Image (cartoon, rainbow, N blue to C red; front, side, top):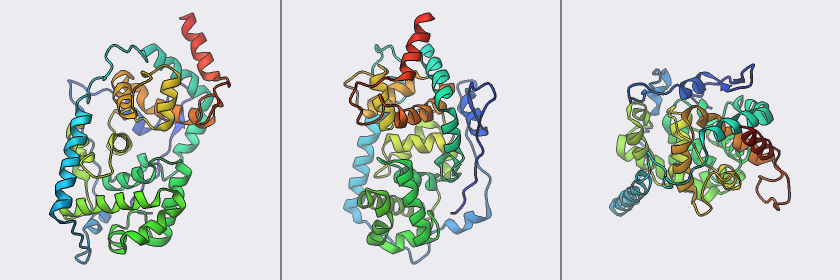
Length: 325
């Protein structure tokens, strides 16, 4: 599969926190206003990540100019609330609400999240930035099981998810057919090839690991500068690969944030991500993302398509606990 190191994650004995080396790093606030820069060790496989001389991709001047304008628009939109909520007067979730949700959800879904962490394809296990970007694209707007089908198909056709010379030289139609089993294959094949084109043009090698040395703002700016990488996908890479303290909002989290009153009703996905990233305490961000995601898959009241007449046991328990406090 390429340079992927398996991660072991477990639920702590007192069920108070999902624990792993990565989680411990995320849960440790930086000191003196500084954020730690995480650097991985170089590996022998790194020398293979330079594109083959025969892998040539040219998008032309117009394509590059359009990409630059799009990147500037995305950056202006995201940076407006990079460190603050777009809803400063909206008082939820509070720290106590986050603590209560964490306790209740880890009791209900901790074992299921633990099982998901054992999957070697989980993006946080991928130490290379470009590889994490590709996995983030494959997981866009679909279930993790569909994303894994696409990854398994890439292994079968190309020998690896990250065989970038083969993917780039094989062209759009081959990649599109390869990704068909995972859904949204036309869109995702275009995005992956576009990212590979841009990486080749900028750096001449399949390597974006200089992002480990950048601060949060500069790393985010570069990630969303790639066509097809929005704030949500960028946050996936920031959290799971670069080990930064961000809260990622997907469709499950967005829906449940609305049901639980954790966002204004009119808030978009991007606005919700900015709001929750600013309001959820850093030590709960990593855990709550996965716990809410799992809750959204199985709760009859909170999963997609619910008719609204079902009970949410988690919400009832949280409301009861908060009332007593």
